[in-house]
Length: 299
Image (cartoon, rainbow, N blue to C red; front, side):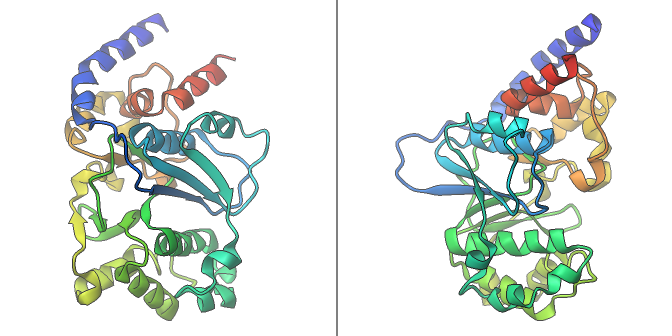
């Protein structure tokens, strides 16, 4: 174990220059309201480590933003990581009122039909809809709960992130409120919604709108994959393999964050002290959550 800890320390020193070089200066003395949104749409009463790490990392690198976790269920008082997140000065957790969220929005009729309730992908479809309508009303940045932020996001405006294949993802969305592209997305989602298709209102929909162009897609920034998806979903195991640590950090050195593809990796863990990329990302970007993870493993 001592050897593992020493190895981790060496790794930290090796990559400190890469990671610190990627950090931007903290935002100070601003009165502009900025929002970063996370959505938990399964109704879970708990938060796992990866979700806590994602939220803490956004808070750490964006102190001038409100970091908001919207939940469809009630988080339990026994939620350990919730207690840790409550110590962050710019974090808040809100149980969303779905009826109110969709009221008077372009997706009001879609939500009222409750078609998504009959889908085996109802959690994903509700999450897609909630992220669009939340940005429509409030604006800001939406991040999936498996995105670890590595630097300030304040320079990002109205845009989508492209995967390595060139297809837009809805795992990261940046929009001003009432942006017309969001309106187009919501209207199209309600129009073509297919409860049997996983990505009916997700990347497939964004891809069709991206390819068709049109006025709603004007003045959008299409961010290259390296901004958040330098390590794409096909290589998600790299984050857990200590032999890939150097390669991972070389590829993400210019990134704003990384996407851990939790739908594929949720049953995979890392050994404390292994020095894999996931662990080092946690050490640097969500230190409070990582400290709690370590203490839990020791007990």
